[in-house]
Image 1 (cartoon, rainbow, N blue to C red):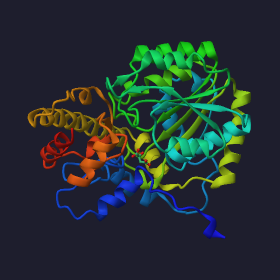
Image 2: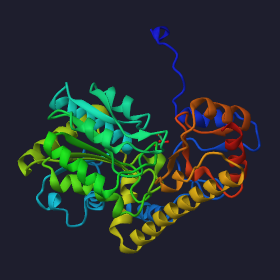
Image 3: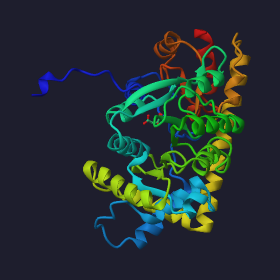
Length: 396
Ligand code: LMR
């Protein structure tokens, strides 16, 4: 049977890790998959997570199934983190939510739910968007369209073109927006731009689908929630996929949240049952461990403070690395102004160089990053930044 399957090219992001592992160059640099790394190139377990693991080990007395929606403490804490402690939609009991296996799990079950609502639903995604958005949403059977977002020539957002395109979106269409730290470009909407998108959403009656995978990595945990809160507080319906992979460093534990803001409590109750039934039909219930850790951290004042400081430290370090790269590129004679890297936010930057240049820097200098020219800023450190800048300048 399986001989009919065609061979596939490696995944554009995850495939880079395998290629990097096989490279024997002692000076190779990995700026591929979006994981945070410290100065030594390690992805540490956050201190707050290590503490929570000890607490969980003491506290957990059974490995029986958890409830179909997941850990309710985790869900409630995550909803407050995303929507705010005093969120009007939470107070009005308008939010259905389940713990999901990672941000990917959340994106997929929400997409499946959209198919249940209307199998002809169109989802508009930014051009460009995270490489896995299209398979995750498209494989659920939804139709994908793109709206203009980023201009490689100016290294900025094509906001007028984006708005013009959203003004043509039809009622009931879904528009995927990156809550903060746009993946892959690092180019985020300003608050005024979010406000303008909200007005178009009201006018066209489209449904915003917020993907929030990097909360706290842009400006702050509060500021980064601006877009998601704005949409949730001002529209009757919004859908949200969130991930704890990056800001809790819980990548392999697969911790995410799928939430739906509904028009009223009656719809919320039905949507809750539907989303649990979607999950039951795919994986039954989410893994318990990571969600339990996040619940412990967010429920404990002192651990929560520790975690917030660790998020702030990761964000500030990535900002420093951006500045270091820009300076080194300049010092090494780059004839292009890379100052835009300092304006971009979160874990990623788009270097705005061509796929040929990306391949050349990989083949000649063993520097690994996504062909779109997306680099993982957290892969830079004091030791490799000079080599990296020289390698990049050599292919410009
Ligand atoms: C990334 O964008 O590199 C991460 O979100 C990892 C992944 O699954 O692609």
